[in-house]
Length: 525
Image 1 (cartoon, rainbow, N blue to C red):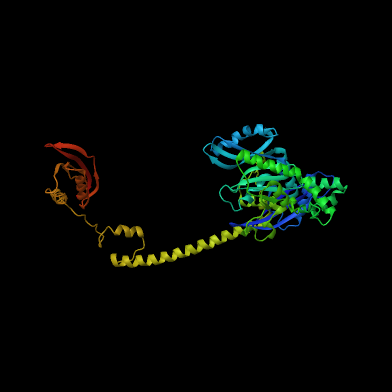
Image 2: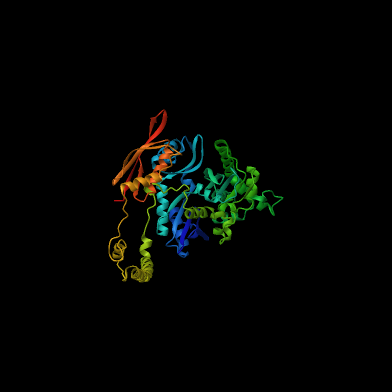
């Protein structure tokens, strides 16, 4: 049975959910969902949890799903660092000290993770992500209350898009800037070679546009939201707009976006200055990316090609057509894919917040598991019985063959293997087969015949012992000749365990010879 995975994006305007099913070596995106966070006086976290609970109530198999969540980028921070070593094991101990002067939070209150970017001769370059422990714990409790189980991972939103960028076609160190225009904040991730290189969260989004419309027209927020979604930023000039009112509304929206555009320009400058990265294009996603004419406005101001984030066709996304251009669902899709890949992309469930497996789902499926276990045991028993029957048939065949062979050899059928083995060393009438006898003279003659001929090499035998544990000593011209002597002794039936001893130098008649010894065991009486 496949495992269901949920990617959750707790946005301030709406909650997004990506549903994926994973099986053996395959995964499939099932659906994408969005639910507007209800208005009210309750804290935003409670209203987000209520919207998420409503979404889950409409899903099949939502209760037993594995949840992966994104922490809104504004609640954390990310910094690019270069460490003067390449050993990954040294990163965790030194990272808090490196971050302390760079983050606006007490470092002892932070949960810290990191993503390796690349390694050079000078050391390791990485992207550190951090968030207050209280914020991460709050998201865990928020999702746990709505879903009934804790999220397996909590990824900082501004770096989660890296898993989407890895799917984009890339040439070498080509860089792109992904811009997620949300309701309250805009997340920016610059990727190079398919990997995160620079991340930033900007405290401006679609909410500031809504406020600008409210101030200009004294509208309610609900009517201002509707007007914002009807805006076309390409109709700023009166000559292009169907009416002056449309042009005025477009200019108000464009003006409200001006601080965001300035922040995006500053981000490009910072990435170019700090890392030497210059993106070739801007990829838009998030709820704000649906604003008509936004791409043209950013293209004119950033002087870069701007288009919607579009993913290449892939089997795991084929079922949901809108996944190719995820728009507002980009973050929830990215988080779900992180869960499928099991990759490490800035997971903030570290230390005391590390995920602890909950085996309650096993108790819920106790009957199914027990049934499967019994089926496996039954199959094993049947297989063992079949193997036993096969062995018994083979035993019967071998027993009948042994009876025939022993009847022919010994004159009577036998089935006792030990008795047959014992009788094999006896004659047909039960008398022990005698061993071959050889006198000392016979052995000496055999040795003389087997040794290398004297006309080819010079061999002098100085000592000879032909008892049970015998030996042969002498001199020869070379070690190779000694090897020939050893081989000669091994070819004699009466000798076993022939072992060559130490070979040393010996001098005779101004000619250097080799002194040698060989031991053996005599098997002849």
